[in-house]
Length: 127
Ligand SMILES: [Zn+2]
Image (cartoon, rainbow, N blue to C red; front, side):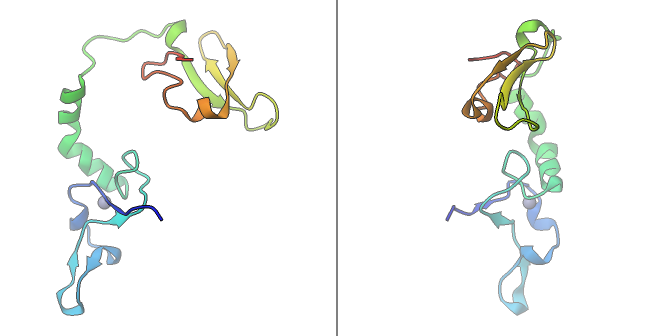
């Protein structure tokens, strides 16, 4: 069983829902949601509202911390890669890297498809 973790939404406890209520009957209080997995904010927030509230509080600081884009990035053949999955033909060439400028396809493994580092953050093929 995986460990429970708290929603990182700073106002999660302020949203009044039944499942956030904890404590004895005469002294119920709302608490931050705790689950084994979440589907928002990269697996860190319980819903879209908590994801939005996280960004409202921390988004600008995160941009300042990791560095803002200060000049235009340019799309070229070298940074036009995406990983794709061919849903229609599960046997052959199921996973591939696709260059949407040149339309080149390069077969990749399922592992490479799932690996976030196969394509760099700026769209370059890293394999
Ligand atoms: Zn939440």
